[in-house]
Length: 87
Image (tube, rainbow, N blue to C red; front, side, top):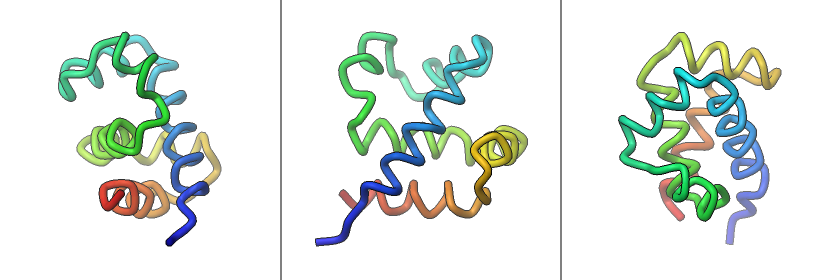
C-alpha cells in the first residue's frame, strides 16, 4: 500500500490556504457543494482534499498562488489530487 501522508498533508495545507480568503472560501463551497459543517467534519477526508485541489486546479492563478505560498510546485498539488482521487 502506498504512503499518502505527504499528499494528504499538502492537500490539507492547501485547504487551509484556500479558507484563508473569504471570497475564495465562498467559491470553494459554492462550486463543490460542501458546507462549513462538511469541512469541519471531513477536512481530512481524501475526497474533500482532492475536491479542494481540483478547485484550485480549475483556476490556475489560485493554484499558482497556493503553490507559491506553500513553497511547492503547482505540479505537486496536481499530483496530490490525482493520488487522493485513487483512495
